[in-house]
Length: 348
Image (tube, rainbow, N blue to C red; front, side):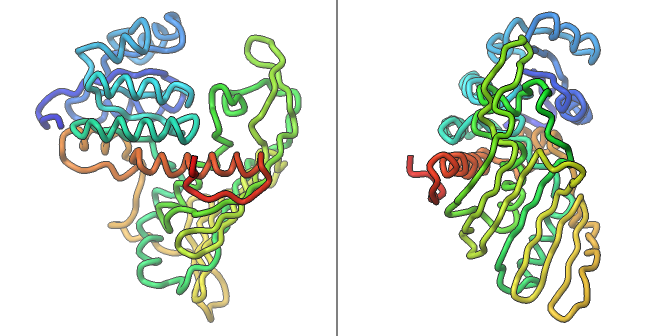
């Protein structure tokens, strides 16, 4: 850990929109933190970011940034294909790591990252958390502890972007398995939220569909698309509930993001940032108030810096949790390919 009085110097690898809008301002908002260096995919891009965001140094490569003795912590804002190699190199170089979600390309990489982090207990290793339910997580957890639902029976997760299928759109990184790995749309992020409330799955059965199987990439090349645009997952949860996850990018004008928990005595519904609930005998779901001491929010960068200084532990999100959601994601991919139910975690 680092003394609370010491300046923490952060190097940024990959300054995309989320890193520029959230992580860099969030880090700079912490006392005694300097964003010292940046590297993007090209020297020109790196210099442009450094100039626009007043970052004093530009590294020649991510390896050079990681090996810079003047850097204490590395913020990884790249696409998933670089999360594992940069994390392993940063930990080996004695740097704290905050990596963008999704943690890795696949479960094997996530496990590698977890093992490397375990080998360096003096360093903080954190994944940017699923943000959608942060405001209500503590209230949902309390209601579950208090028996609001009785016995939890079913969980339904429905996520749809409200867009029509665009066959002519170019390939983006989420559709490029070489960059995103086995990650599919926001499936892993929503599963992470469910894990915070009720724990993980022990088996999955999944079907998915890629409707546009070829798209043109940034270089003008026609590329095969292997990442689904619509996924349905049926999961048995360790807690005894049955869960369904439907995540779709082809739901023209039908936009939704919700988690519904149904129990023997009550129902909870999280929808578009708000929580609703009802007990047996009620006529309808009503808004559930979120007490001030339970209201959560985005404090990722604050938690990361506080963990480095020994002020608080990482709660959102540990590498152990990252492994769990990548195990789930990979099981979903394998289930789709093999047409059968698979146990979670995977046996190999």
